[in-house]
Every structure is written in structure tokens, then in C-alpha cells.
Length: 297
View 1 (cartoon, rainbow, N blue to C red):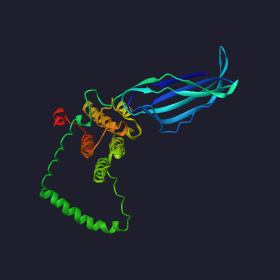
View 2: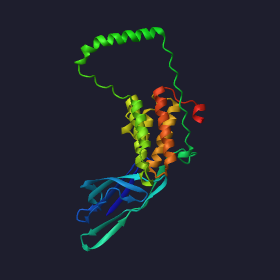
View 3: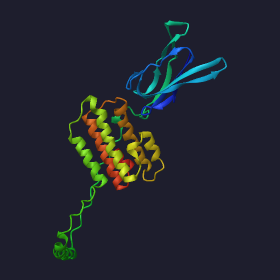
View 4: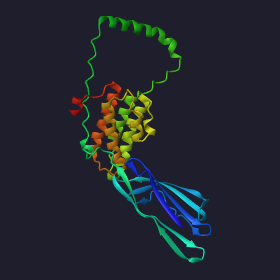
């Protein structure tokens, strides 16, 4: 019996997944069965997210014909650093001695899991503070010409009103993406904040608000992409200058720590994260990212 185990890739980010390929080759008359593992099973420092077992097939080697059993397992890392996959054990029986159960074990595998934060950043509290809101310009005082125009328009409206009464009311204009996103943030904060076990879900809703806004305003399919895929998609997009890309990168990676890496969160940090999301939405709408001095404020 031959047992081969390999992990692809050997190095991955904390937000990624790895594929563990297990191959068992036996003689045609040897009895072997791959053990079933339920999804969500802890596999060392990983969680099992998907399993695909290929049908056994005959392979020819120099020493004769063998039967190959292959299984592919998708693993999700739970912490950064050097992760060690424990040895895999496979049981089998020999044709001449069916009453004895034999076992073969693989060697442990090391997988490098890279942190989502830069080396100099320890946690969410190291993120830059959001830029303060910009005041809106005061409306200009109406002139007498505008008052006259308004009076004429009102008179014309009376004449046209009778013709329009029998028409069905026009459909309300769709809510602009910015107002919809800001309203969603307010609703998220207005609800009851979760306990320790509920923060990953709360941060998923928070990032989903920003990702939907980005898709609606830029066309980038942010809700369907991982953080890495999204950052690659906007890398050369002129609508995302370096300062804005870095702000989005810091926000999304910090949120991924809570969603996937078990980073602790609390109501104060959650409100700060929501304030950063609001600032990013307002800056995208204004079309100009905060400058270095504003970001430091």
C-alpha cells in the first residue's frame, strides 16, 4: 500500500483556502476504504469546508497494476503562522490475512498562513481614524427673479393639474446608492449589538453594505469577490487612487480578522468600524479621497 499526501498551496493568506490531496494506492485485491469526514470538522489548525472523492481507477506501474483512490479536501485556516497538518492514518486489510487490520501513516505537513495585517499593525486599533465630515455649502438666498419664476410655475401647475389628475401616479425614483448604504449603516448600529459569538456575522453585514455600494457605483463585483480578488480588481482602476485603495485595504483586512480569524471585537470598535465605512462611502461619492493631513486627524 502507498499513501501520498500533499497540500496546495504550501503558503496562503489567512482569508484563503488550501486543498489537501490524499492518494492511496493498493494492489487490486487489497481492501481499503477512505474514512468519511463531516464538513466543519477540525483538521489540526484548519476547518474542513469541502470534500470530493474521485472514483477508484487502475494505474500501471513498473511493479504491476495498482488501484488509486484519491480524495481532495478544501481546508480553511483558523490562525496565521506556521500551521502543522497532523499525520493522516489509513487502515487496510491484506488478502492473505483478512482478520488483521493494518495501518499506514503520512508525515505531518507544514503550511505557512500569512497574516492579513501588515507586520507593524497589531490590531484594529492601529487603523487610521476616519476623516471628519465636510460641511455642505450654504444655499444661496433666492432672488426676486426666482420668486417670480416660482409664482409662474405655480400658476401653470394649477392649469395642468386637471389634465394630470386622471394619469396614474409616477413611480418613485429609486433611492440613490449613497443614501441606501448610509441608511443600512444606521440600521445596523440601531439594532442590538451582538455578544462575543455574534461579531463575525455583524462584521459580514457591515462589509456587505460597503461592498454593495461599491458595486452599484463602480461596477466592480465586490460582493462576489474575496478581499484579495477585490484589491487586485481595483489596483489599476483610476477611480481608486492609492490613498483610497489603502483605506479600503485596511478596512477590509481588519474586518476579515474578526470574520475569519477570531479577532476580538466590542461595541466601541464596532462603532469605529462603521464610522470608517461611512467615511469611505462619503469619499467615494465626493470623488476625492481624504488627504494625508485629513487622514491623520
